[in-house]
Image (cartoon, rainbow over all chains, first blue to last red; front, side, top):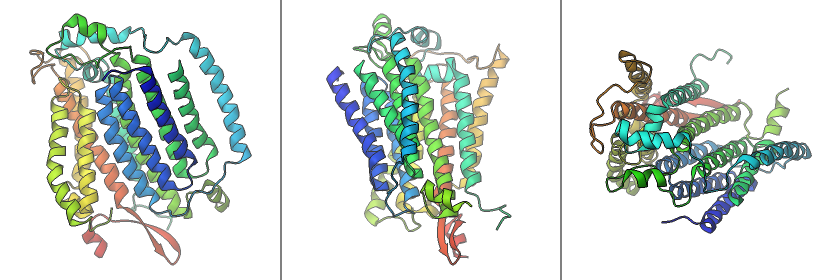
Amino acid sequence: MTLNLPLLVVLMLLMTGGCVISITARSLTSSVVSMGTAGLILSILFLLLGAPDIAIVQVFVEIVALIVLLSTIRRETRADMSSSGLYGVLTLIIFALFLFVFMLHGSEIVRPFGQPVIKMGAEYIKASPVLLKAPNTVTATVLDFRGYDTLGEATVIFTAIAGVIVLLRIKGRKDE
Amino acid sequence: MIVYIIVALMFFTGLYGIIAKKNIIKIIVGINIVGYASNLLFILLGYKWGGIAPIITEDMTAVYFIEKAVDPLPQALVLTSIVIDLAFVAFLAALAIRLFERYGTFDMDKIRRLKG
Amino acid sequence: MNDKGMSEIVKGISRIVFPFILLYGLSLILYGHITPGGGFSGGVVITGGFVLLLLAFGKGYVFRILPVNIAKALDSAGALGFLAIALLGFLSSSFFYNLLPKGYIFHLWSAGTIILSNIMIGLKIASGLFVAIAVLSMARLIHTKEGIKYKQSRTTEEEDQ
C-alpha cells in the first residue's frame, strides 16, 4: 500500500482528535480508552511510514499501557470535574509562545516532508548487509552500530522497574 | 509542512493536559501524548516519498535498496524510546496508587489542601 | 485482575492462543536480524502473552508458571548478559566489537553477536515488564476503619492467612 499526503493527513487528524478527546473527557475511563485509540492509529502510521519494527512494538506497548492505566483507575469511580484554572491556561500560553518561537527557527532548517538528507543512516544502510550480513538495518543499528544507546536504555528500564518495586513494597515501613 | 503543524498541535494538546489538568491520570495521559507526538516527528523526519522499510530481501538488488530505503537511525532511536515510555507509565501508575492510598483521591487540588 | 479469573470461555480461548503468542515472540527474537522484529518487539509480545494469562486466569495461576522472584533474576541475567556480550569485544579490540564470524546473509546463524544480543535483550524486556505488571497487580487498597490502607498480596494462599 502506497502512502499519499491526504491519507497521512486524515490519519494524523484522527489521531489528534483522539488526543483532544482523551484530554477533555469527563470520565477517566473514556479518557484512557481514547488515548489507546490514538496509540493504535499511531501504529498504523508507523507501518505506512516504512517502520514495521516500531509498529509491532507500538501495538503491544499500547495494549499493556492501557491495561496498567485501567487497573489503576479502577479505584476511583468519580468523574474528573476539575476545571483548568486561569493560572494553568496562562502558564500554557506563555509556554506555547516560547516553544512557537523555537519552532519558527526550526522550520527554517528542516527539509520539506518526504525529501530528507540521509547522512549517517546511508552509511548504516550500505554497511549492514555487506559488513555485518544482517538484512534488518534497524536491528543492526540498535545492537551493533549504536550499542551504547541500548545499554543505557537497559539501565533506564532496570531503574524504572526497581522504582516500581520499591514504591509498592510493604515490608520495611516503620512509620505506621 | 502541514504534517509538522499537525504534530505540533498534538504536542500542545499533551502539554495542555500536563499543565492545566488537575487529575493525576490526565497528567499521565498528557505525558503519553507528548511521547506519541515526538516519536511520530522522528519517523516523519526520516521518511522519503516512495520509501520502503530498511530491510533488504532476497529479490532486491543493493542499488535499489540503497536508493529506496528510509532512514534507519530515527527508527532505532524511537524503538528504545517506546519501551522506556511503557516502563515510565508503570512507574507513574505506582506513584498514583501510592498517592491514592495516602489521600483517597486523584485530584491534585484536594491533595494539596489535605497536606497541611 | 481478580484472583478467580474470567469466565470459562475466556479461559479456553486464552489457553489455545497463549502458546501461539509465545511462539510469535520467540520467532520475532530469533529472526530479528533477518525479518522485522528484534529483542524489543519479541520481549514486549511475550509480556503481552503473560498479561493475557494474568487477566484470564488470575494471579495464582501465573505466579505458579513464572514466580516473580525468578522473573527478577531473569531480568538481571538479561542485563548482565548484554553487558557480557559487550565486554566480549575486549578480547579482540574494543567495547561492543562484533568479533564472532559473520556467516552468510539470510541465514539464521549470521551477523555475529547480534543474535545473542537479541536473545539477551528479549529476556530482559520480557521479564522486566512482567515484574512491573505483576507488582502493580499485587497492589491492592482495602477499606478499613481508619480509611484506605495499602496491602500487598504475594499469592492467594498468603492472602487467606
